[in-house]
Length: 102
Image 1 (tube, rainbow, N blue to C red):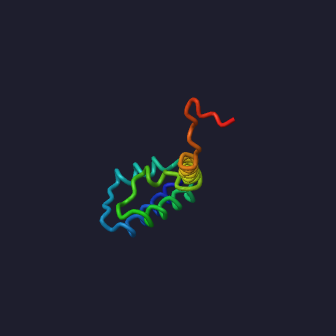
Image 2 (image 1 turned 180 degrees about the horizontal axis):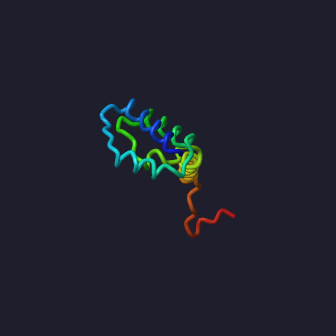
Image 3 (image 1 turned 90 degrees about the horizontal axis):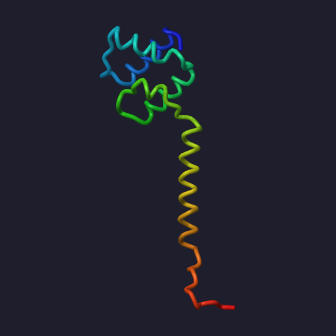
């Protein structure tokens, strides 16, 4: 992001979280730490954060990828665990030795 875009983003943060106080050191740090991500990603992550947290975001929150990859992995993992649980509940018990039914 450009410096002006980071400042615009910080203005949105102050609007959503009026308790946030800024100084030149904080602004400069955010400008540096967000310089390698796009405004679109930062804005998307900020909007998600505002919708889901009552606390002001950190640089890491703005950099976080809240989009598809992490969500997909979480959902796939939940589905795998549910499937494994289903298999466990519906499994046929093992035969004890000598219980051959041939």
